[in-house]
Image (cartoon, rainbow, N blue to C red; front, side, top):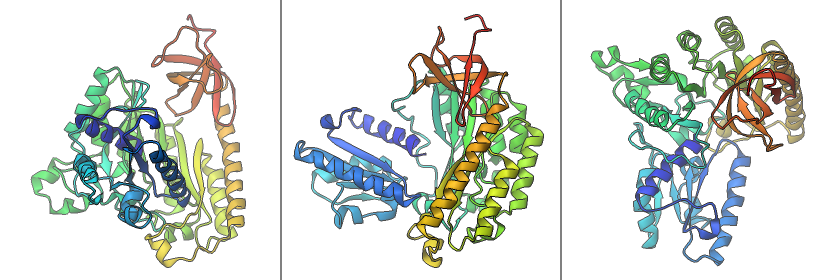
Length: 445
């Protein structure tokens, strides 16, 4: 989402006369778009800010700004107390950047962190930053209403609100005309997509009968874009187990150009911890949803988010997480030790009582098990042909392409005479925990 927002910022600044540079020494303005989901991310930001500020010794005209969730969370503190930045801009205030930059030039306090109740950037065509011309992000929702006790997002991103499907269609049409091959629909919770004419999702009940009758949910949007642009592959992220509905899975199965991959965070395999996290589903409901996905889309790739060391987590709770992983056997996952975030319910009410050593041990066990499952899941492709969209050169060798399957598996294979953006049938000959390795010898190249 921050990557997509940075492209919106680039568009706004381009209209104000700015242009991008890859060299900080040439920059008049450096904007750091930030995340507050974990303390480690914020520490990385602080180190980056120190580095950028050191450039001011050599470039007196350089201005440094903070964007995104960390800006929303800390507001004036970084500007006034820590004096690390020249301007602070929250996720819903980027249109105000030209005015804020003018305030900086006139030595005024430049802060705008007001959260919106509507989609803020639906009328802006993002400038694709360092893009490959193949993959693009398109935001469809903003904010989150779920209030998980560990999560700072509702406080930094605001309430859930959806974007006009016509605006989404227009942006994808622009990408299609430019030859993009894959679009990822983005939101903190895409399954909560609900367009009834504008406004926060929580206000839907106040909508008129006509608005409710003509409202569109996520499955409707998926069908719209998939049927309108059959030559584009579609992905989406992120889903929430309590909000994902069967009609979304059925729509995925209906259209070949909707990728067979779902990122479905659970955070813990323990019902006790799930309740304490305010995850509004149980372990059993989650497993039932997984089974429904695999019933409708048998080869669907599924990944997870997992937090270990949540306050009061016992060894039994940890074992419940491991047993859930054994039952589901995810293709891959994103795994973290719990990091207390100021302002969240957990930060205010739960003692962070799991030692760093215990968190680390449990995290290593989760990662080790996931690596085992990733390897097992990758082995199922051995000897099969996979349709792969080429999106970059392999990191390890410039003689190999890298691309992804519909299930989101990374595949590397010799370049031959293929090009970026080609869709190639690759025979998988080997695999690691993270990568499928193949060739196209059987295919005329």
